[in-house]
Length: 247
Image (cartoon, rainbow, N blue to C red; front, side):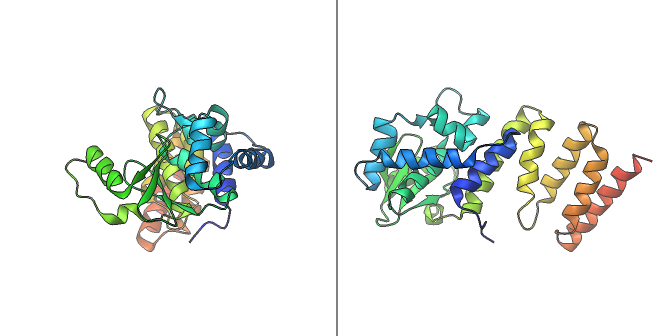
């Protein structure tokens, strides 16, 4: 089920929650409006030239795995990001300029597609237009042993985009062994339909590591109510184990 919230607002709410702070979303949305106003030529190439040429947005070559690169407000502020957040920026500025584009979830490198020309894509990290052949070549350089599938260049949903942002953040926080920072990411990931039992277990472990065992038990029971029958049983068993530690 698609998230009934505009992509720009959803990305900002995600950013605020994962940073543990309240964003002024009206002001952040206004920043996107002002970026769109800077685009003189309301075409796809005009949007790219304005953002990456005139305004200096670029992929973060120095701190690629910084969490800030996954937060839309920070990307706007720092003018640096990773492919998916820079793609999100392009999509929302393009939408404001009435330029039709879509997100492309190619494994390993998110792209933006031109809705009017199936052979035109944007590499957001480098801020340049590329062809379908160049996109395939990029995939093969990243995955030399994998076979390219044309479905990799298909449009993805807003929910898929947000899930990918959350997955990036989850991996960063797991690598940093930071339970406190991991919890809000998992909370959002588990809001979607058919919650992942692996992520539910991660949330329980992170809460338990911070001494919040009762909260972990309650969360497992809540998630079990939305899970499939087999997974619900496993989650309720986990909740029972957690509750037993408090007696």
